Image 1: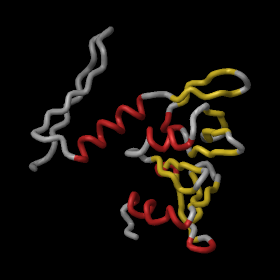
Image 2 (image 1 turned 45 degrees about the vertical axis):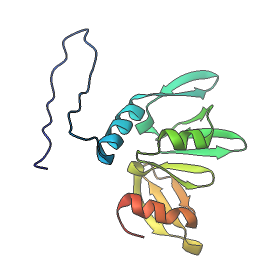
Image 3 (image 1 turned 90 degrees about the vertical axis):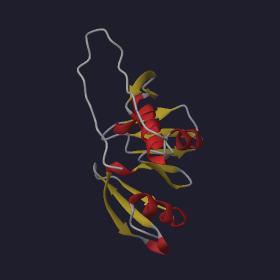
Image 4 (image 1 turned 60 degrees about the vertical axis):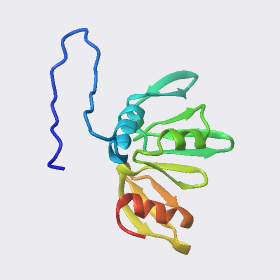
Length: 150
């Protein structure tokens, strides 16, 4: 393939946004691109102090299940989300989100540094300074997703 031509056009006022993909055969990369675009455009309905707050998925650092509740951790705010962790894992399966333990799904784009931990685990230091543990059984999938072998 000789490359991909990308054209960005101004949208007339009142017109609906549209993305057109022209390809001979939609391969896995094209399908992943479509899925990523769609899932990142859908805001998440979250709860904060009894109010519903719409949160952009790319602002979420990680999701964590605690005592039958699921929370979305953003840079400095935490929201409750009325979804199961496995539902979020499925929704974001072809994006930068990856399950890293039984109770955590992390946004890989928010990782600042990975350091070795005990018993084959890794510790992720996020851009906001928070830390998350990557369980040993999830380390190979993380390394594969990051393209660092393993």
